[in-house]
Amino acid sequence: MTSPTFETFGFAEPLARALTQVGYTTPTPIQVQALPPQLEGRDLLGLAETGSGKTATFVLPLLQAIAANPVELGWKQVHTLILAPTRELAVQIDLEVASLARNMNIRRAVILGGVSKGPQINALKRGVHVCVATPGRLLDHVNMRSCDLSGVHTLVLDEADRMFDMGFIRDIKKIVSLIPMKRRTALFSATMPPEIRKFAYEILQDPFRVDLSTKTMVVDRIDQKVMVVRSAEKQSRLHTILADPACERVIVFTRTKRGADRVAERLGMAGINSAAFHGNKAQNARQRALNDFMAGHTRVLVATDIAARGIDVNNITHVINFDMPLDPETLRPSRRPHCAQGHQRHRDLVV
Image 1 (cartoon, rainbow, N blue to C red):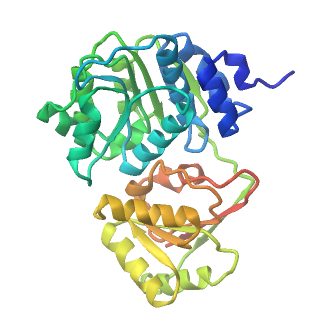
Image 2 (image 1 turned 90 degrees about the vertical axis):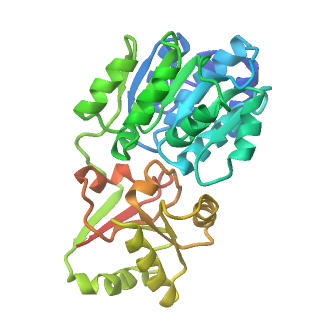
């Protein structure tokens, strides 16, 4: 049986050209299943992990809709709204939109906290075709009347379970109440606890469901180890692990922000190039730490799990849980930033 290609979906010429330019040729499994119903205008409930290709899965249909039916934007209006749980994920999604819309004349805005509202107000005032936002900052703009959600045509919620975990449910419900009921909605989540399922079916209309979640994990390319050590010895054990030259690009997860700072500081004192990454850092500091890590300038990123959820980083060699996570789902390898295809990854749990 012939494998599908992106040509199969009949994208508009600007989108088809962009797909070629960025090197997208073969759709991922979630794209094969989830693109057709969205292109037909159906709501979608997608269960898939980070690294499955789900960003392009929801970006391509919304750009196709804009290409097929160009819209005249009113003052401060938002045509398509994408909600993300973290600032970094919002930036990643906006970059994907920019990449795939490179041949289209569309206006974009990324709305997130930790940075000045001024440039965001300027970006919103002429109206935007695609707005990627974190819930809290978006509501700030709504309250300031610097954006208008009454004309939203498409709503996408990415990493919905993480937005619930981070306490955004009230903000999300408020945002949903401000946009038209007649819209297309897509909701993506890695897990489907009862509260997410209930909410999903409150906001989705006869959704097409795609389930590529991995309830039973059998990961043949990931070596997993548990190391039981005394609490006072965890830092020195971490240094021992990182002494292995194979630890080329490592993420260390801590339970608290203070813990991340402490671990990173001690790694620095030991001559190990590292950076802390958590919600108390200014946005420019967080983005700089992430960029340095992705570029290979920083070898170890010490992060809280909440801050790093949904982040997509290639070629990670090791993921280390310095603390035992509170959420059992967090221990699953697929919940972590993914490594490039064919690149083996190791995970260690130091408890």
